[in-house]
Every structure is written in structure tokens, then in C-alpha cells.
Image (cartoon, rainbow over all chains, first blue to last red; front, top):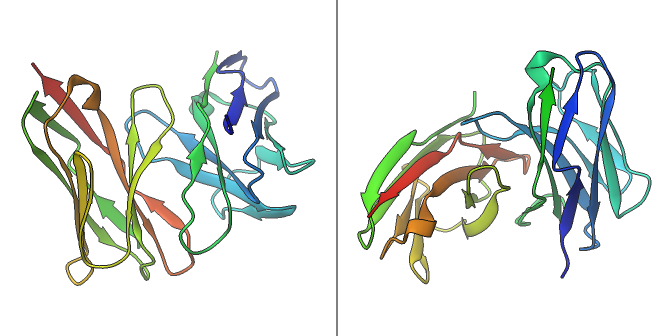
Length: 114
Length: 109
């Protein structure tokens, strides 16, 4: 089945220790998104790629970086995680950018910062 | 600023009908989505409305009034598995998706 896969599902890291979350997709979608979602809050868009074009949201902290080496994979790097970065991180894909394109979400990675 | 308002939590009984409302103020409008999100899981797509009126899809229906900045999601014949959060999201004039915080729906037997 075509899908969006995130690894790991649960990640524990120490305060200040860099961590990388990964996302892969078999849908061959052009657009990939990273969201941060805290409990009972709306998903917050961090950045998205249209193919290799990177789009950073204005309020995304510099502590968050992303890489998309090819169509299928996208990584979220948190350079120095703080306690406030503990959240669910959701990867999503869509066929296109602009207009109506349903977003398909991966299962998420729940990040704990100790 | 851009704003999506939904009730924080609602409770309903198994077998009943529930309506979850969403009001929005956004810079432009290119459609409204409803997503379902079970606890600890990713959101899944339910519906998309861009024209006024009611769209029916099985037990779920979604309504839109653009002039009022208003939508609702109607769930019929509620089942225990419908216990989840329901997220309203609007595509603004820049085709950016603006998300509401979600409505937690609790179904009681």
C-alpha cells in the first residue's frame, strides 16, 4: 500500500542533544511537509518542500532544519532540543502545491526531551 | 490575523447525531477541510468543501457557508470508534492551510 512512513514512532533525547526524525513516502508526491503538534493544539507547519524547493515558515526557530535528499525521503533535524520542543512531529505529503490537494499524514514521531 | 474557532470538547451518545461547528476568519478562502485524528495518531482526511452547501459522505456530512465564514461536520449513527478529535482547516489566499485546534468528541454508550 502507498503510504507515508515515519521513524522512529517514539524518540527520547536529552536536552541539547541533536536528533533527527525521518519520513519516507511511496506516494511519489511532490510536496512534503513537517508539522509540530502539541497536545490539544492545532498542527503547526514548520516547513515544506515542493520538489527540492524549500519553504521555511517565518516563525520556525533556527533550531529546526530539514533535508530532502530525494523525492521519497525528508528529514527533520533539531540541532539543540529544548524542553519546549517535546511534541508530536507529523510528516505529510500532497500531490501538488496550491489549490485543493489533500494531505496524507504519517503516523507521527512523539519526541520526549529529558 | 487568521483565526479558526471550534469548540474544545463535545460529548454525545452512541447511535445519536452530533454537529461540530467551525467558524473562520482568514485572508482569502480556497476551501475548507475536515480531518479526523484519533489520540496519538495522525490526522486522516474526511472532507473538502469549497462551494456553499452540504456534502454527504456516508455517515459524515460537511456544510459550508462562505458568506458566514462557517462550516459544520455532521456525524450520524455515532459509533464508539468515532471518539476522536475533529480538525477544521482552511486554505487561505496563499493556499496555506490554517488549522483549528480541533474538537475532542467523546462518545458514551
